[in-house]
Amino acid sequence: MGQPDPYGPPPGGHPQQQYGQPGTPPQGQYGPPPGQFPPGQFPPGQQGFPPAPPVPKKSKAGTFIKFGVIGVVVIVAVVVGIVSFANSPASSKAGDCLTITEFTRGGDDPAKADCNDPKANVKIAAKLDSSSQDCPGGSDAGYDTYSVSGRSSYKLCLMINAKQGDCLANFTSTTKGYVKVSCTDPTKDGELVKVISGQADKNLCQDTEATRVAVYPEPATTMCVKTNE
Image (cartoon, rainbow, N blue to C red; front, side, top):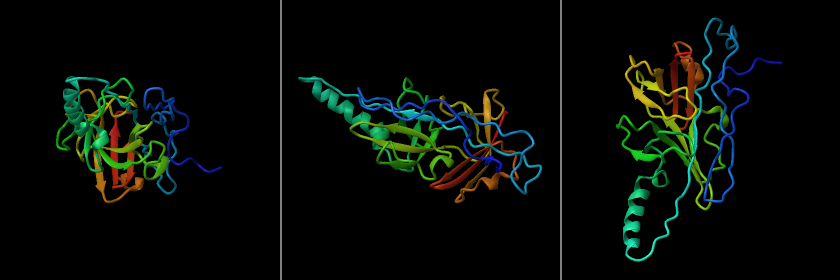
């Protein structure tokens, strides 16, 4: 029996819930929690290089809210609805950035944000027409996800919106949104020691101190992350 892929998803995991229109039953399961690579095992031909497990994935389920108002209030509701839609992930596209504070049902809904805003912690790599579709690269890719199911169904495949040298808090959490912090901040638990655009290859992190690797096939990007583990 061969050795497991040191960068592959860890076995097991917590149930992942997705929510759609009111009354729609939950779908899916939570992605696996951060994995641990067996001590002393290295990729073939790379003796002595500490393996970097994949980045822990976060997944958030979304809901639609129906507005049922009448009379003159309808005008106000329509205006509010237009503003809300313009800032919601439903109106987003690949390349847009979002702010997500909690990858849980009870957390705030994602909001569109300028990608240069420090609070814009994820970028949309791909927008799929169905919540049941797989992100590019399938389960081997490092995307976080935001899914909406029901009458209007879609899935957002999300990348970490950060650059080489950035430090993050909540990086190892499977529910809390990433927060950019100073690299001297005691809450820091992830540092992007190398980011390669145009290539999606976990082996690019072998000459770094990375303990986690996020590989995004579309757009091709590799992030090598050093954690406190």
